[in-house]
Amino acid sequence: MKCPYCNSEDSKVIDSRDVNECVRRRRQCLDCNERFTTYERVLPCSLFVIKKDRRREEFNKDKLLSGIQKACGKRPLPVGAVEKLADDIEAEIYHMGKSEIASYKIGDMVMEGLKDLDYIAYIRFASVYRDFSDITDLKQEVDTLFNVGAVKKSVANGQLTLLPDEKSEKLSGGQDRIKNG
Ligand SMILES: [Zn+2]
Image 1 (cartoon, protein in one colour):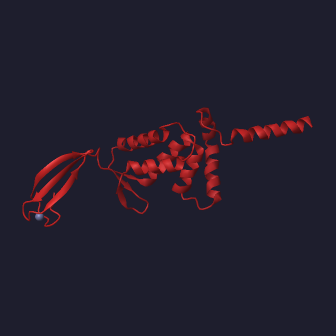
Image 2 (image 1 turned 135 degrees about the vertical axis):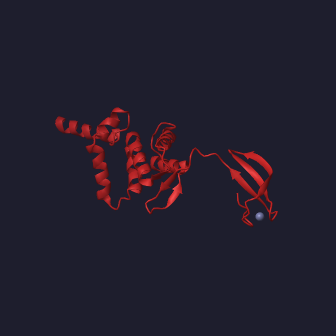
Image 3 (image 1 turned 30 degrees about the horizontal axis):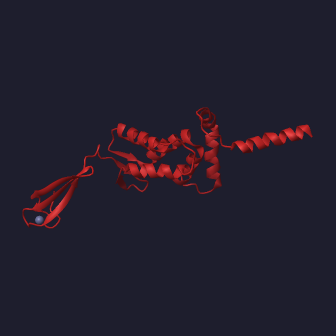
């Protein structure tokens, strides 16, 4: 631990205490006698995310969670579903045992998870993450949902249908009236 004042590597700990999940240490430089503070924290293992522009930044679970939460805002999801998805993705990433991962891979994992959870959240996330430039991109993504049979599968899983119930009832009701008239 280098002294921030003189860069000396010799310091002594003059005070040490637990703060939340960290250890806070008050140190004094043996060369210049200045005092400074360090925080120590245990990490599962350091993991870096490689962004689109090649910048690397440390993996941040909170960032992952807030991205998923934004996409799922006001959607009728079971309590804890969003947190569970973030937990599962974090676990999967650490399970790979690599020290770095491309951000698009994490994005793909979120997309996969949201596809099973909620279409609207999936489309919302995709529109930001895939950077939809116009309605054609959006339509393509919705078409993919139908093409891969994801809709059928997820309805079986108890996910809401794409058309609200009232709307489909109205549609069939209208047809009945035409038949009767
Ligand atoms: Zn010093």
